[in-house]
Image (cartoon, rainbow, N blue to C red):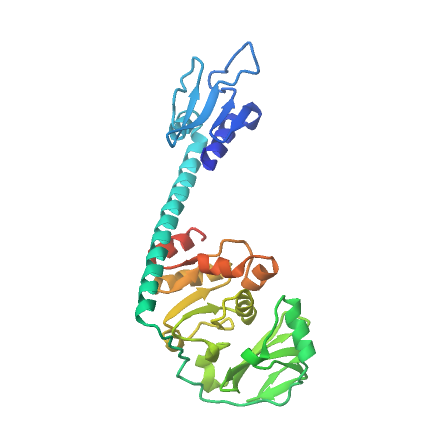
Length: 340
């Protein structure tokens, strides 16, 4: 099979109008180098073809283009395309090496895990031991499960209060710790520990506005769903609650959301295996690189959606997207840097 990059640059060089016939292993065109036949406009003696896994360009006329590699063909006759072609080939070869190496690493990792599971036949479930200092409950919000369910439904989600705790609706301004929160028509998502609040996240039902409340002594615990995860399993870390819920909806359930903040080191170090699933934008890429350089795993998104909730609603298999594109180490750094 011909390499798609070779096909692209061959066509760019000779011109699409000169192409006469095309198969998966051979493309024929009228040769622009020698001019091809002067008597028949149907002659197409310049060929891009594959032989023994290698690609050549050859003109079957009295021409200087005889069994050239695509590199030589472009360098000799189309130097304006040569540097660009080299870069594309390098990127393609690098991706192949990285993918092959990642596959080998994943196979080894699965083998090790399988061996360990045969030795340890019991599963340990351990939640975070450190707790926020201030726990409370607020009774100033309305209990409107239908409004809550409808809000999540619009995002393609089903909220489970029996797992994540009850959400509420705020209809008025409130004051906490001498600070005013203009929470008119906001959904309130509490941050729970032992069925008590230690903070809450709120988002407008009608506008792109949100507020987070955390008592000063609880600042280091600004993480949603923190006390539901098993710290001995892979913990998937998202920027926003709706992204984490999207992953949960797709079947990845050991999830937390850091509500746009940087997850504190003492909490992060409590996770045996942390995987960052940050937004698919420049800020997310920059932060992913930072975590990769600090030894953590990240997800290298293979689509153009901005975040997980957008991916879910676009019909992307979010579980497969996350599990198949988790990267780490130098390979992850190289992959992420190509996106910068």
